[in-house]
Image (cartoon, rainbow, N blue to C red; front, side):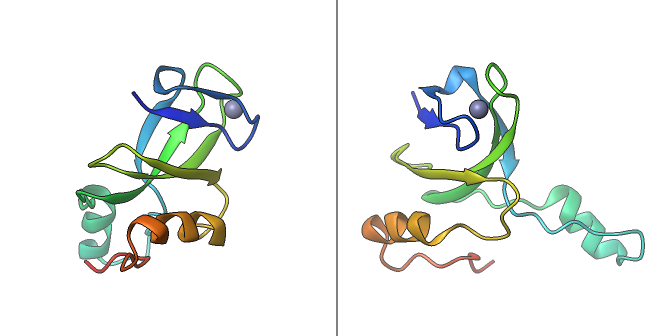
Length: 109
Ligand SMILES: [Zn+2]
């Protein structure tokens, strides 16, 4: 069971109050994008065993989307942050690197 904190309303609750929305920080492809770029945007996702940056929505709370960093193997949550950010904030990166010193973002694909 994940215990998450919504960075928008600051409520901490079990994951059943939230809904996962997949990988965070996807680069959207516009109408002028190449077909291969659009295919990657639609279908290609990372599925790491370890650190993953994800989108979540506080469904039974404020209803807002946010990003969260967690370890998919241990279920450790490193923190959550506003969905409007383009990269994980420094305090999240520092929390991740305490457990995973070699972690890089964006992950090499
Ligand atoms: Zn909330």
